[in-house]
Amino acid sequence: YNAQQAQRQQQMMMKLLGQSTSPEIAETLWQRRSELLEDGKLTGQKITATLLFTDLKGFSTISEQLSPERLLGWLNEYLEAMTQSVQAYHGVINKFTGDGVMAVFGAPIAHEDQVAIARDTQNAVACALDMGERLERLNQQWAKAGLPEVKMRAGIYTGSVVVGSLGSKTRLEYGVIGDGVNTASRLESLDKQRQ
Image (cartoon, rainbow, N blue to C red; front, side, top):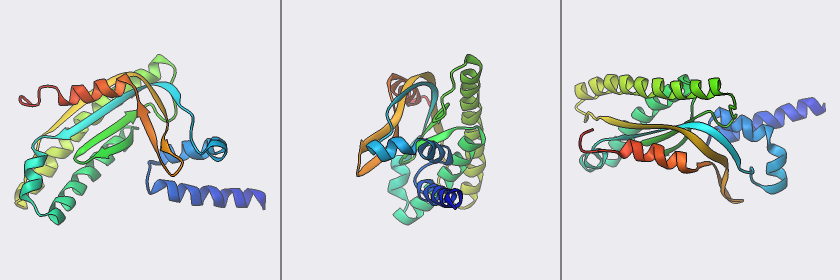
């Protein structure tokens, strides 16, 4: 009976968490639920991870040209394709920043050996290339439908970050912070004019 109750609770928790986070993060939150129940937060954990930031060139101009409803549909189509790519390469989407994506490879389950960390980095690079290919296919579909075509920038960096709960007890998110995050973000926005 207790095992069945625990399984039901886990399924319910995963369903609730799965609506706002990735399955990997939901699983980590479930495994570390005693911390959450005790504190209401996951304590920070220092790890080495690979960060991937992407952004669309000219999104602001496009958002002025399309109606909000059409823009939302167009953007969701793009984000769906990018999400599939990140998941295919074992990454976790930490957040969407409008037209941007922040993905993490090597979290929430920390990899400590150099081979696994190198594999995370390779997965992030392969993911970015796959995102570019998926965007090319989307651009072909959008051109036929009279929708705008776009280009994407990407920044990738492997380094030390801290992962854990970010926010307050009433509004938490799984956060990734540190200089590695800042460096990946800067690499994405480097030389925007030349694309």
